[in-house]
Amino acid sequence: ADLDPDFQERCLPILKAAAEKGEVRPGDVAYLEDRVRVAQKRPQLYGTQYGVRHDADGNSMKDASGAMIYLLPVVEDAAGLDERRAAVGLGPWFEYETMMANMQNREPSKTPTDWDDTLPIDPQRKR
Image (tube, rainbow, N blue to C red; front, side, top):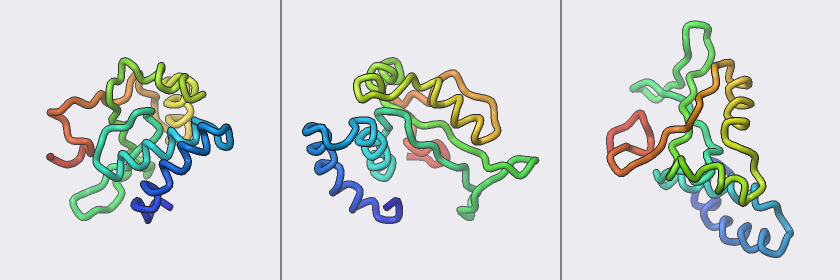
């Protein structure tokens, strides 16, 4: 439902309640939480969502080999990222990043982008 972020936002508390009852995995809630936060132009909590760099016309940008250029997640409190991920059953971010980098045909990054109030949530745009 990425084309309907309002629907995702409305579903988030329902999914959270289902996770509290053991009906869904907390890690699935984390993915939706990050998607909702990205749509709201807020930093992620779990570092699960990657973006694609776009040009001024909104077209996806590619590198010289024709591969998409991906943007690392912008996360709140990068120092506590792995602790938050572990609390919902997700592995360390670097392991996830290594998998994503392999799929995206690029070298893995050691850390995601650590948000502070001077950075825009979308690294391509000014506040």
